[in-house]
Length: 407
Image (cartoon, rainbow, N blue to C red):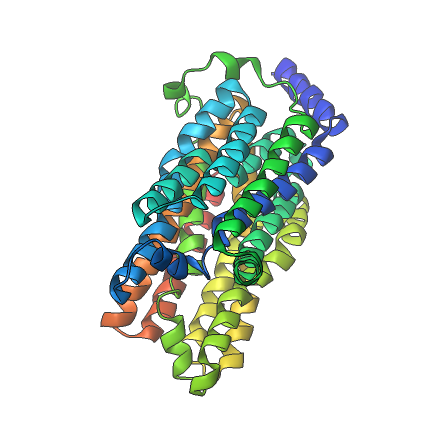
C-alpha cells in the first residue's frame, strides 16, 4: 500500500513539474478553433444547401438539420473509440489526428458539389474530429489532480467560447469573402492548430499498464463503478437541461415580447446560459478543487433545478434572459467537476476510455434534449418543458448525493 501511495505521490510531483500549463494553453486554443469550425456554418447553412441545388423550402430546412446534426451524431458514436485509442497509443496522437482530419474535412466542404457530399463531409468531421473531447482527456490525465478542476474549467470556458463565437463568425465571413472561402479559411486556421499541437504539445509518460491494456478490460479495471455511472448520467442531464428549450424558445419568446424583437430576444436567451457558463466554469472548477467536486455538482444541480421553475412563469423577455444567465452560472461548474470525478475514480490506464463514454453521454443529451423539449412543448405545453427539466435536475442532485454518501 505504501509503495502504491509513493508511486502516486511521485507521479503527481512529476505532473506538477511538467509542461501541463503549456499543454492547457494549446488545448484551449485548439478546442476553441475546432468548435468554431463545427458551429460557424449554422447561420449560412440553409443558404449553402440552396446553393447546392435544393430548392424546396421544406427540403432546405430538412437537409440543413440533417447536415448540422450529422457531425454530432458521428462524434457521439466514435468518442469512446478515440478515448480507448488515446489510452493505448497516446493522447497527443489523437489530437494530431483530430486537428488534421478536421482541417481537411472543413476545407473539402468548400468544394462540395451537392447536399449529399456536404452531409457526408459533416459526418466525416465528427468521425475524424473530437479535438475538444480529446483535449479534455489529455488535460485531465496530464494535470495534477489538485488542479484538475480549475484546468478543465478553463478548457470548458474555451469550448463554450468557441460555441458562442462560431455562429458570430459564420454571420460575418460569408458576406465578406463568400461561403466557400469561409470553409477554406477556417480549414486553414484549424491546420495552424494541427501545427501547434504537433510541435508545442508535450505528453508526459503514460502508465505502463496503458500500453498493454486491452480495450475490453477498461471497465473491469474500475474498482468502484458508481461514481462513473453517476457522472455519465449527470453529463446527460446537463445537456438535456441546456438543449431542451431549443425547439420552443422562439415560440415562447413570441408570447413575451413584441413581434419585431422576437428573434433578437430569442438569440439572447439562447446565448445567456452559455455566457454564464463561460464566466463561471474556471472559478467553480477551482472552488471544487478546494471544497470537493461532488459537493459542487450537487449544489449546481440543485440550484439549476430551482432556477428552472420560475422560467415556466416569466412575464417578460428580460426575466427569461436573466434566469437563463443565472442557470448558466450554475451549470458552468458541472463539466469540469464531471471530468475531475472520473479522473479521480478510474485508473490512469483507462482515463481516456471512461471520459470518452462521458462525452458520448453528453452528445446523447444534445440529441435527446431538443427531441424531448419539442415533444413536451408541443403536446403538453411550453411551461412543462421547464418544470420537467427541473424535476430531472433535482433527481440528478438527489442521485449524486446518495452515491457520494454511500462512498
